[in-house]
Length: 291
Image (tube, rainbow, N blue to C red; front, side):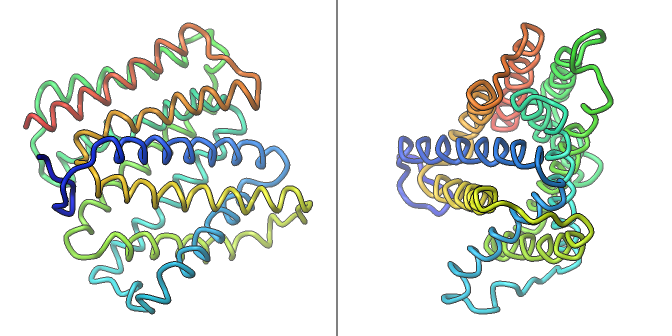
């Protein structure tokens, strides 16, 4: 029987169910970000997300671990990782102001392909010809989505592209820090750093939210925190290679939420581009597994 990350017997159906639940929550988080950023500055929306995330992390982990959870062997890299995550949030949420949810999510899913490309100069890893082909195919998918003459052929598409680049750097730093720090330390450190950073910025963008919007902001942070917890639990039940394809369910959920909440349906070019990005990401993961 295959084993999960922690060596326990694999329970693939439980792992798949948890990944799908996590992707639904991530897509819901993005839909809430898009909705709230229509009423409040992006900085304020991102601040609320990290504040709630950090408070929930504190409630869950501080009683059992104390301040030891913040002790890092490489605090400089942790700070850089946190800044990459904060930039990802700001850029992607800004992009949602101008772009439909499904297409923005699909463009952001270039991150795994960028990780493949950047792992060569930054980590010295070997990348096969097939993986390079998958990277190029993913960029071709973006070009199809934002083809000249299309509704999305605007500078705004650079926002999720930049977000994907920042997120790929975040993932590479996560991989590097896994050699020295626990996942709990890394997640708590990133959440706390971004909470402090956004708290310093939010007074310049503050607007008093209505009670309903304040509750949605709480839900925003709760969705993000719960999604990360479910994703962590999923890898305890099944190996990453099995679960990776189901992560692309987030694009499907984003499309459904975009239709239900914002009335947007991707056009044919958008659907083809989204499919190509998904297939290229799956191909890169398969190539890496073979290697």
